[in-house]
Amino acid sequence: MSNSSERSVERVLDLLEELANWPYGVSLSDISRAVQLNKTTVYRLLNTLIDKGYVLKDPVSGKYRLSMRLFELGSQGQNGRHILTVALPYMERLARKTNKTICLAIPDGVDVVYLFKGGAYNIGARTPIYVGLRAPMYCTGTGKSIMASLSDEEIRTIWKHSSISKVADNTITSLPTFLEEIARIRVQGYAIDNVEHDIGFCGVAASIYDCNHYPCAAIGVSGSVKEISLEQLHTLAPEIKEIANEISQLLNN
Image 1: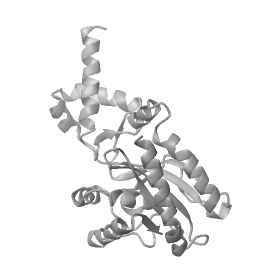
Image 2: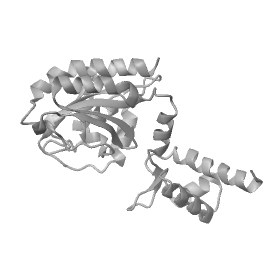
Image 3: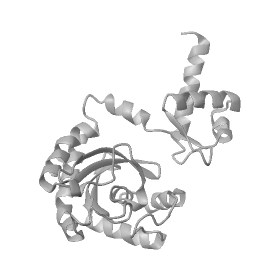
Image 4: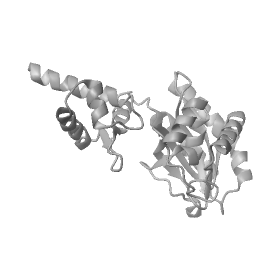
């Protein structure tokens, strides 16, 4: 490999590593300054990374951030030990038992991204969740369960950078009220989505942890409010917590 090619690879890696420090996005000027390259060069490299799916550009703010592509590659490189492989049999078992939609989501900035949706053999129980869906943490069961495992400072940062709005009947839009909700989640060990993200749907979720006891994902059960009550969600919660714990243990073996 020529010196110029080696330098190009180094520049791309520098960009990716710097973008990882900006989960909420970074401007062209700021990242150019951080990696000490002129904006023209950085702009060209970023566009190549966008074309390859490694970087996303916010159409409103113009800021750049990493996509989930590196996560996907990392998962593929773990010889089948990545979270989907480990969690799949547990989620399938849960789907058969509950006849509800089972999902797995991971945190990405201020959002969660759904990597799995399964179950819901009863057509009436199907939810609007789909694989690849990006949803705000603050108003989803999976997102709230993940946030409850973070520090108060991290929670406030996520809240500050989220577009807070009332998207469903019971969406929490007040930070003090949300922090009270987080306190309840921490005590009970699971989160309830009480018609907070999708009109007519509710759910329960619990976090999955990596070897550093950091919430790397969340598993949830959801369904139509016509098919499942809040009481039933709370009844399901201990099993969701147990499964999340088992997946966490297997991930860390």
